[in-house]
Image 1 (tube, rainbow, N blue to C red):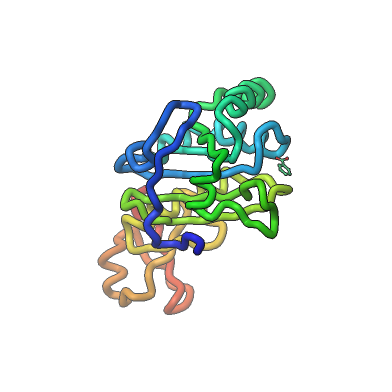
Image 2 (cartoon, rainbow, N blue to C red):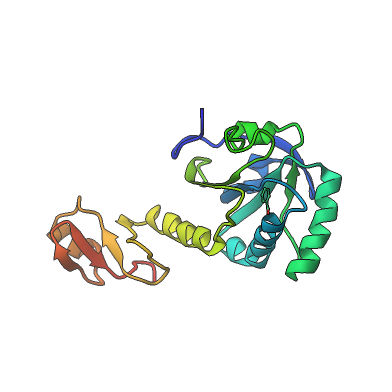
Length: 211
Ligand code: BEZ
């Protein structure tokens, strides 16, 4: 059974390039991002882990702990990280789980047998401070992910978990957000003193509350 939004993200212990970790201890009271890639020493994965390293400070600013996983061995991971650093001009500062027996891959449903019996697909799990799954993404081996999109979703998740708003298509930090239709116009005006822009009774915008 695959993990769905709102499910508790299962804890696990794993061996990583940064030593042995307990997943819950690693993410602490903040947010977690667990992402899989099919295999070490492969081209798309090299660019993906490089891009994640390039953006690791952006994730840290949002209190998100990054953790990568694939079914390769620790030795292989360590050698490949050197290649990523060299070719992508970065320093990978987040741990890679060595999961040759597929413990984490199976726990998180990262093996899709009809795509590949052997390799993990490109999965992303964003986990909230309550340890619940907030976002899942699954990409095929042939398509590298857009890590700016993952940051964008995390901005939305963090905003909407604190305010009674949601974010429209293509929203980016700083843009207007949508007021929950559950509020009457009167209550919305009180709750969102920066202003309420009514397009339809069910489609109402306000400036981002925490800006
Ligand atoms: C890649 O990262 O380029 C890749 C990995 C596994 C299968 C296909 C492509």
